[in-house]
Image (cartoon, rainbow, N blue to C red; front, side, top):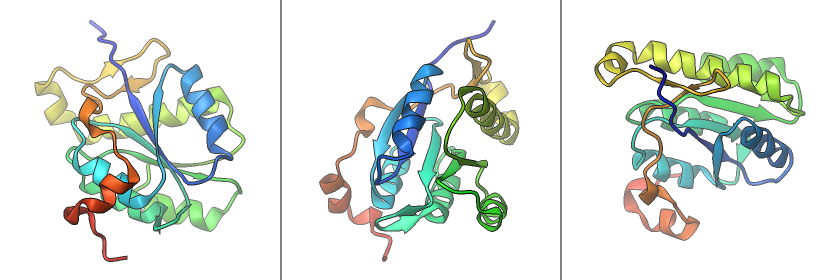
Length: 175
């Protein structure tokens, strides 16, 4: 009785490296990814999200940083796990990210097996946090690779352009 659904990974970054490799590894795991370039786009997207998504975010963005994305994801309905992506090892940043609610912290280069474990762990934390609600909705789905997937992913109408995100008054973060 294992339902298989599609999970979407939201990748928030404004630089190609190391995210090109991350997207390639996600595709290898059968996970579609949607790119957003700014915190404003991510915040706008999260307000219109139907169900859960997994978020990967760069440590710096043109209009914010990883902490802004984590906070917005925690305030989303339902909350979404965020994995912070860095190009370098920084123990202080790693600990701070976990303390502020990030599901994990990864450093490029990515190995598919390691990435699969990180994703599985992040989705298990989400499932644990939503346990009472998930039993009523039929539980979380498990993909063929053993990755826990979100049961209701991104609605088709949530594609965002930067110009559209800036036009929304409810998105203004005051930054």
